[in-house]
Each structure stands twice: as C-alpha cells, then as structure tokens.
Image 1 (cartoon, rainbow, N blue to C red):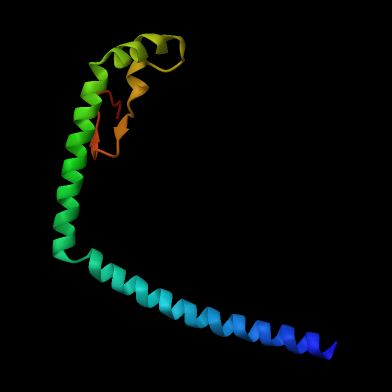
Image 2 (cartoon, rainbow, N blue to C red; image 1 turned 135 degrees about the vertical axis):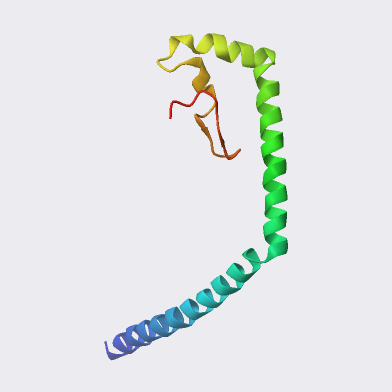
Length: 104
C-alpha cells in the first residue's frame, strides 16, 4: 500500500512539474510563431496567396456555373426550399467578398 501511495504521489508531482514546463515551452513557441506571422515578408506572402486563391475560386465558380453540371444543379434544386442561388454561399468567406445575391 505504501508503495502504491508513493508511486501515485510521484506520478502526481511529475505531472504537475511536467505541465508547468510544458506550459512554458508552449508559451515560448506561441511567441515565436507570433513573431513569424507578424513578419512583413510573411504578411506579404499571405496577401499574395490569398489573392491567388480568390482568383482561382472565382474562376472555378464561374466554370462550374457554365458547365453541364452547374446547369443540372441549378435546375434540379428547384424542389428544395432554398433558392437556386443558394448553391453558392451568401457570404463568400473564402473569397473575402460578399456575393451579389446577398440580402444584407
């Protein structure tokens, strides 16, 4: 019984000390990650990547709308309770813009 209590006590102490050390390392990593993310070069690359993603998203959306599949999707969704324009999100959050069918 005494051995079990010592083992459990040692386990608890190790957990507490490890958690503190882990938390400090986590905070250090978080600070370093924030420094990297706030760096102007990274911000510029993020802006370029987002602009490219927006362009590709818009092109893909237009190609789908003009394809046979897009036409089929727009004609078969009339049985649902939502309008056919809801096939695309009201807010194109990926593109960072609001679509033209928005009611706000």
